[in-house]
Image (cartoon, rainbow, N blue to C red; front, side, top):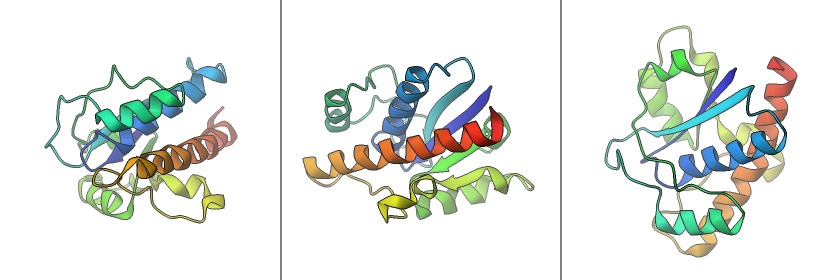
Length: 157
């Protein structure tokens, strides 16, 4: 089983959406027995909370259900549990680097490394913006999810 964890700041917008989108993609490709995913936040503000309602609505419009997800905080043990630790932006990656056990740095990626065609390096945080920001985030996550799954297929399946 290849295991992936997506990480953003509070685990209520970007990373749960990445978990939901990637989970749906994996299932649609018939790989849900071979690839699993989770999500977390670098901060603890929202632990136990459901994803942001605006993001839940935006994801639902794309056929992705986030209703079963709850926020949790990333921990150093995630580097042992997961094959891929995926940060949404450079700040998240830097925070994850601080808790990464020595020798496991090769598991840490920025999500858009898997979608160079977007011309972006980071999935922006839509929390303080309007509806267009949430749509953009889902667009970027859908693209990066395809690239990540291609990477997993090439290296692990």
